[in-house]
Image (cartoon, rainbow, N blue to C red; front, side):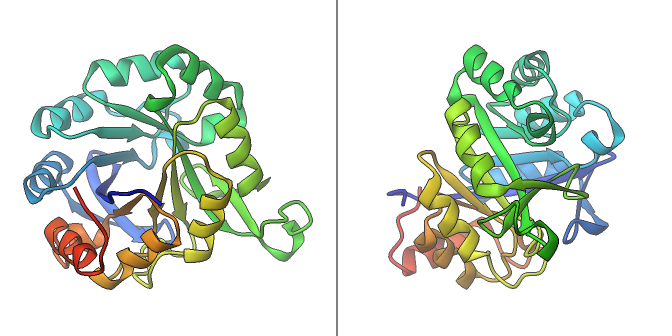
Length: 258
């Protein structure tokens, strides 16, 4: 487990607005991404993650102007994902202010993309974004871990075991894992601690736990399960919690924060 916990608000963006749903369905408008990014920066966020959740589904690139405007408002690391298909996409995102790049669907479709990004820009730039759900009964023989990865913003289930894909991607050069539980996403029932623990067992790189945060009490268990950072969206966007609230709860639980 990391010595110091990072708290990361996530901006899921569709059509230029921050959105949030439950299990990636029934997305609701939560506000302007640039304004929210600035708010979380002022609250003490350690990083911001910006995910264009419909870019892959719509077959288009991430909105570069929005990334640029967001980067101008925050002076902490900015991770951007959604619609990244080539090293040229990565170069352009870095040129408009991104610090790290998340890849998911395109890397599953063509795993060599992970090697190409890591070779050109370094592992520290590459975040493997994993939208993971518990495997259905018919997929269990292909997924011994019990977890399967999905693509296209959680809409398409693969037959790829989540832990096997994680190991391969790390070997290819992924420098960090963003592990989002589709089952827990937006439910506010807490992080999937079993999934976090399994990812910690197979990962030699930092693990970011995502999906399910509903109260200040949910974050410390994710850290103790093996996360190096905790990511949340709706609890911040709704005003239910601030970054400061989460950090205070972590400190009270004996976990160091930045």
